[in-house]
Image (cartoon, rainbow, N blue to C red; front, side, top):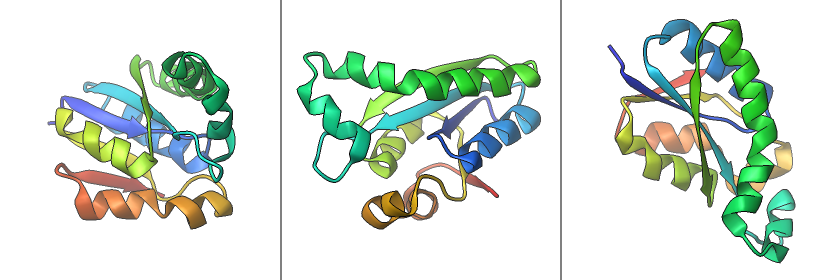
Length: 139
């Protein structure tokens, strides 16, 4: 039985399906929703604005709040409370660095825009190949 489940979420439908799966199938576990905000760079849309912020972590938390609000709504429909966590960096690397503290990762099969996938790569694929813990990929 899983006691700690990590659910990385962006603003995609597949990420919402992954959280719903985790809530439905692992409701007894501690479920943590992780949102990764990209480090400032010319190629990462919303993250570019972070470069102008005085407090990078506070700005990242503000950007994550919409995702967390939707995550709480999904979890509430299953009667589950979730923990939330914000990381700065590239999604796959941030998830892989966080994963050892959990029993499994539940992730959507794909997410983000086509442009995000071209620049960032397929996060789910990287997790399956490199994760130190089991990865459940939800379609």
